[in-house]
Image 1: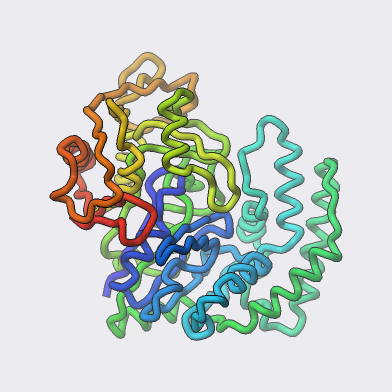
Image 2 (image 1 turned 180 degrees about the vertical axis):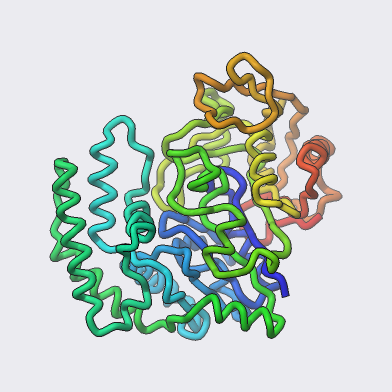
Length: 423
């Protein structure tokens, strides 16, 4: 039984959480394969809005097991808060959530290191969420990190102490003014670790292998977006893990020949949080309208998202790198009311017209070249089937399918799980 992947194709915030929630009824296991609590997967149903940071988005479904894979980095403090927020819904968390022993732990000093590093960069900062994720992945690749499995060892606190002491020396090196009370942070951390230890830790690669052999359907859930991939994103303004399809193999221990459908999610326009190049970014009333109507604020940080027209060059690139087989277009309802819609179909790159994503898309190198389409005024939020779509929206979808050469199977017309139209 193949493992299907669900990925964001832009700079994150595409609506992955909602679509995982919608699709979970078709799967037995939802497995998160990378990233940390910088993810903010928003789910909305029954009049309640839920934001998950580390826990997979299938947690609200009784039929699904939820796996936090080895490629994820876990902050026990944030994880505990997520668990506390779920208690009111009477979910059987213990039997529906397991964690890979090979997943790495975010220590309090990782977060302090993150803050010190970002402060030291000054105006050159990359827009980190300051969750300690980058430093944790650095320790992982530097072979210094602590993993979930270490918590089962008698001497895990000694290992913690050695790593935390190293971090404090590194913080001193940055020579920036970072005020903190490590003893207080550690008390919260240790208490949260004890809560974490109430869950089952597993050898997730074996768990998923056996699940496949027994015919269970698995959906791998990514965090962040493809353009934030550490290798293929807009480096250095990226996250610290592989957010693309290849990351699911390394982040779960799934063999490449076991990957089935690759489901790619994108917004009908483009957004970005934090620093980094963004060729189609708007600074006018259109951009303000997108942000206001789309409620474009980070679910994790609360930061306003930068908004712009759909960048088809970047989207084609993400489809190509991931091998996307099906597309889901989110927030089509936000574009209602625009007289004219623009789509970036080429770049002027150093005076030359190109239709691929180059090495550097900073503003001094790249100017977007737009195609225009007629907009629509109809309110999409009450629509329930594709036959109700205005002709201009259907034209928009048809144009994108032709250019991307991949079918758009789902169109989202609102935040609630019911506002999801299958084509």
